[in-house]
Length: 466
Ligand SMILES: Nc1nc2c(ncn2[C@@H]2O[C@H](COP(=O)(O)OP(=O)(O)OP(=O)(O)O)[C@@H](O)[C@H]2O)c(=O)[nH]1
Ligand SMILES: *[C@@H]1O[C@H](CO)[C@@H](O)[C@H](O)[C@H]1NC(C)=O
Ligand SMILES: *[C@@H]1O[C@H](CO)[C@@H](O)[C@H](O)[C@H]1NC(C)=O
Ligand SMILES: *[C@@H]1O[C@H](CO)[C@@H](O)[C@H](O)[C@H]1NC(C)=O
Image 1 (cartoon, rainbow, N blue to C red):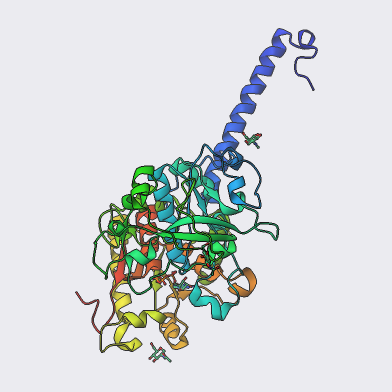
Image 2: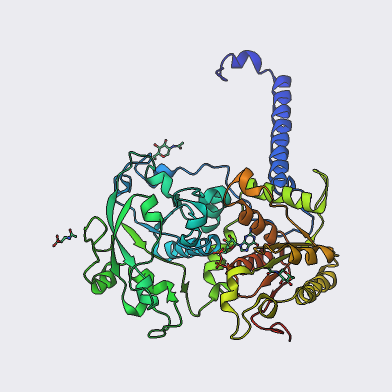
């Protein structure tokens, strides 16, 4: 109805007052409802009041219009969809899930400092998992199903695209050739070829790589350190340094040779990146963590799922509050390859439960002293399959999540996704030194919960003794 109709007839003075009152009451109610709604996003999860470090208020209600940064809907060839006046950057994952999450953190930070629009690919199972899990294109995990992309865009104040918005991933999408930089053969010497990844295959990209210059390395000539610096790679995004660094490209699978693309800048591997020292993500000043990683909040979907698993583990009814707890991550299996010489058996190499218990106690004491919070509840997540070991966990009165049917019911990725979210919900955290899973979990607990953390050292008997 047109609001101006019959105006003079309706608006006598007392009516006007009534209407303005109604309008005020309605607005107050709306604002109230909005405030409650805003507040209820975290409340809905029934997290304990301890978790005060809430995310900044997201403007996620405003839909992101990807066509502002693309020509339109996904096209069969990506360059048809890229806008000529804008610049883009992308890269591929090629490791386990956590490694690939770190690569995406690095991609986003590189996008920030080069002022390019990042295009994020899906996560695919890594090479090492291929034999046990069938073919690589199975189970692609979309970044925005796990990470709240609207929140991340707001926090980073940059547009962020995903590949499925750029290029169709159906049978009609075409294989296209593109030139990318290759970092991998520069930062290590065992493998002289570009880093292998299933992502170009998944995206139907036929890549011709150009070997990046030697000066990208943080420690030139040091073969034991694979790190290159953010700004070395960023420099290659600009015309003069790029031009000065060009060498003949390797031919692609389709035997096409192309120099590194300037419109859509791409790298084979962005896992090993720092600004000033190796293993920087663990350190307080890490810009990749501060400008990107800390803003990669979970989607409500995956957070709800983790909460459901926690409730079941603690035997808590659906709407009851989850008590504050200590999250523990114990990494075993292939870490046996990294044990000290002469201690390559699990019992010699990995920390015994008594050591983990000691660290848990320290975190509990710290929480009690600093915040007056009693955290008798302990949740253990691990890649360990040995039931005798888990029996030891149970005897300590600690709980585990029931992943008996997780993969079958929800899919390939869900055990580690749910475990990572649960780890990040701890009031405090105890992890395994040198595990990227533990490193990200401890950064999340420190940043999001202001919680104490410890890393248990391992490699030989007594490795964690002070
Ligand atoms: N469900 C589950 N899986 C785990 C856990 N810890 C490790 N894993 C598995 O082991 C894989 C380790 O691969 P990444 O995530 O890339 O980590 P990594 O660098 O190989 O090993 P880390 O240094 O521990 O991270 C994970 O992706 C999981 O599949 C855990 O606590 N729960
Ligand atoms: C998105 O942006 C495009 C291009 O500016 C515009 O035509 C379109 O109407 C916008 N869509 C929405 C839903 O705002
Ligand atoms: C690839 O292309 C080059 C140059 O066009 C040609 O000399 C070479 O024979 C081709 N190689 C293959 C395997 O087709
Ligand atoms: C299983 O774990 C127990 C307790 O940690 C250990 O003693 C045993 O050797 C392990 N068994 C295997 C097959 O690794």
